[in-house]
Image (cartoon, rainbow, N blue to C red; front, side, top):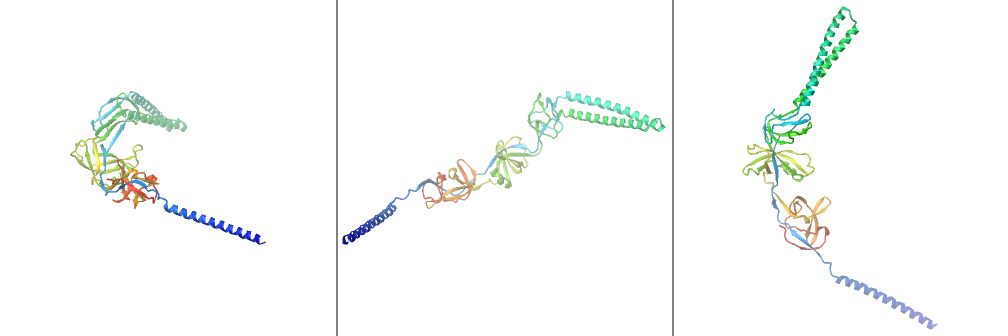
Amino acid sequence: MFNMRLNISRKKCYYALAILAAVCLLAWCLVKSQVAETTTKPEPLTVVRTQVIKPATAAPGYSYAGEVRGRYESQLAFQVTGKIIKRNVELGSVVNAGDVLMQIDAKDIQQLVNSSSAQVSAAQSQLKLAESNLNRYRQLLASGAVSRAQYDQYVNAYDAAAAAAQQAAAQYTQGANQLDYTLLTADKAGVVSAITAEAGQVVSAGQTVVTIVRDGEREIEIHVPENRLEELKAAGQLDVTFWALPTVTLEGRVREIAPMADPVTRTFKVRVSLLNPPPSVKLGMTAAVALADGAVRPAIGIPLAALYQTGDTPAVWVVNDDSLTLRPIRTGSFGNGTIRVLSGLQPGDRIVSNGVHKLKEGQRVKTAGEIYE
């Protein structure tokens, strides 16, 4: 009995020692892991190329190339179809109102006029006969020789003959007008700026063949991108210079802005009126239009590679105490690999200039790079 109790006591001691050993082993593992964590090397910082924003410089004013045009331009066309047999003007010809510019072969139209004239004569003869019969039967009706019904028939015959005569006269007038339309005349005095048809060519009614710039005001036609329209609308005065007249500078005013952009160039056509242009300013001359105040406003330029787009809002990564912050900005025009920043950055800000799409908010970085000029 005593030996049995001694064996049980020994087993308990063994169990207690095993548990104590397991606890010690676990404690040793925990301590070792904590020591390993404290001795693990820190994660290396990402090296980024940065640039420091310099004070804003004055952006050069915009200048738009254009062409001298007339305010009123008439695109003339024949009102009938036919073959051109004569052209009386050349490019640059000065014409007056009523001058014949081109002529269409009128042989077929002349035959139609002759036919209409014959129909008029026949209708008038029928009208005279109906009138004579009506007068005769009016007398017979008064004497009681004919009935009222017979008299009414001749009244209707006279009315029909009168309507037929009127119809024939209208057709003759229409044919005579078409004969006049074979001559293309200038409606206003001006200068021929374009000719799109030649003698011997068959043209259709309404096809433009001659363009005339009327005498009077001269304008400059320019094409403006959509991001510059508001600036141009607010401009009080424009300076207009000419490549062929280096000593001439004229004052201009925005007269008209197209309501829709050109589907190809995506620019808006703008007409600038010239105030008191000298005679030396000729149609078709090359001109340059700029804001009178120089359109100079401070702007900061940054590389396009520094731009980080999040949705519709452009932004840049700003480095502050080796930590990254994404800052929204407002951009302007594009340049040679750069873009103008209108707001959102200040002189002295350090931005990431490359690899911006591999970064994240709050990331620790190591800076490298040169100051941006």
